[in-house]
Amino acid sequence: MANRLADAISPYLRAHADNPVDWFPWGAEAFEEARRRDVPVLISIGYATCHWCHVMARESFSDPALAESLNARFVAVKVDREEHPEVDAGYLSAASAFTGNLGWPLTVFATPDGRAFFAGTYFPPVAVDGRASFRQVLDAVWDAWMERRSEVESNAAAVVAALEAASTAATAVSELPDARALDAAVAALAAAEDERYGGFGTAPKFPVAPVLGFLLARDSGRELGARTLRLMAESPLRDPVDGGFFRYATRRDWSEPHYERMLYDNALLLRCYADAWQQAGEPWAERAADGIAAFLLGVLRSPEGGFASAQDSESTIDGARVEGAYYRLPAAERARLEPPPVDAKVLTGWNGFAIGALARAAFILDRPAWLAAARRAADDLLDRHRSADGLLVRASLGERVSEAAATLEDYGAFASGLLDLALASGDARYAAAARDLIDLCIDAAGDAECPFETPGGGDPVLQSSGMGVRVDPSEGAYPSGLTSAASAAHTLFLLSGERRYERAAREGMRVVAAQAVGTPSAFGAALELMSRLAEEPEQLVLVTPGAEGFDRIRPALMDARGRDLLAAVRRRGAALTAAADDAGAAAFAAEGFELYAGRASIGGEAAAYLCHDFVCDLPVTTADALG
Image (cartoon, rainbow, N blue to C red):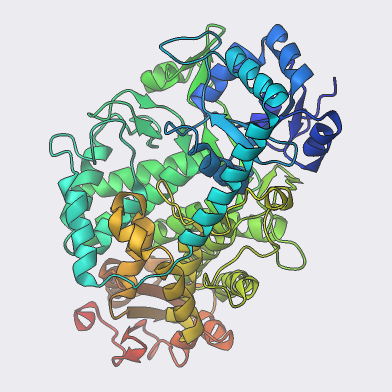
């Protein structure tokens, strides 16, 4: 039996390399083998820090007898959902036809051409509580394949037809919500608040950072958003030692977390806590932001400069893997143990979230080290995750780059992060790189109703099976690729004044407007962008003297008036806040970012330019004059 996973980029796949299951990685070869043998395909989807994925691997995929039966009747494919999010999204949508209990591990059975005909999640090694064992499921699927092939093919065709219909429905446009509709969405979230422990609903409870970002963006939601963030910061969902947040809690009071710590949760929460501090100056928000940043830089940062995907929930203690045991120990006892492993693969889109959050939080809270970390990560990805033709790759591990296709999430989230970095650092190179990425997405869409498409067309194997989702607008734990791309386009409009970016942002959000207003808990990032689109934008540009780079000028080198003005700009909370030195502002203007045209320091002093939809007040040089 060939070991096809031993050299995989994905730590999740390599963790299964020594299973007795004859695993294939995702790709055309597995389906060609299934066609040659005329057998169904088992597609097992998970990720490295997934607790129940570990459990099913130990219970079933490590069982030689079960593996022998599986290998004889199926072609088995192991997929890292983080490396191949398109594959996960397509088969997750298909699985909803068979089970309402969606999650991971996702267990999908497909025809040799990749069409799903049955799916479930975790299956135990023995039947329990009405749930069939994994062996029983394998037997039943094989029996259907051999004895009722026409029924199997009919199910597969019906699933593909349903996906096509859902994809068409997902791109149906509606009008963007006005202020009243957005405030109604806030009210719906408020009605779901757990007034005793904070958060929304009962259990399980997730941090839902995009929803909190939306609440902080609305006058009607800021108190609710800040209250939720404060209660979360004081809860067991936050690691009191390292400062990072766990993925979710299984109990209403935020206790008994699932202990994996994800890059996207912590990056987006860092942004929220920085924004909460900007709005009210609360010490708890600053402490939480400091803790998250310490976790990102101390635990997840890779040697190359990017950020790893996650830290596992399980650690090895006394020879056994135990979930959460490490995190329940105080700092002194942890120091004597090996920490839980890190999924070290670097994902382009998730790194975009981290780059943007670190840059924005660094500017608001005056943390130069965070900005330097964001710069290093951005430079690393621009160097290794971007090909000569400008296209992105999805993932890397060390110096190795994955063959997985980049997604719209990668283009949109990375572009958004680069723009946040450009605004905070005063370096126009990052804004120009972001513009190139969004231009590729707009050009790929052509005349389609959705203005953004993945350059290069996405995963070819998935598309050929009919299981691909053309535009996946779904959100939840982090912004969709569509929302990220639209948000980046909106920022490009605020920088350049080019209406095509504004149109693209609005048209992109029209695709999800009706769904977002109807289910605000699932579309927080989209609603936050729609809130910005519903208001007249305020743009604030600070220009300091010099040509050394704004982020390299310490406030100590500025006079007292300049330092006070910088502090006022940091606290202002405009729709777009940017800072640059004279040379940086000139570079932005030369790149076509018209907001910087004619902007300069005045008489050797820092100057702030406050604009409303590109109509600017006279520059001011004092905090009092800024108002």
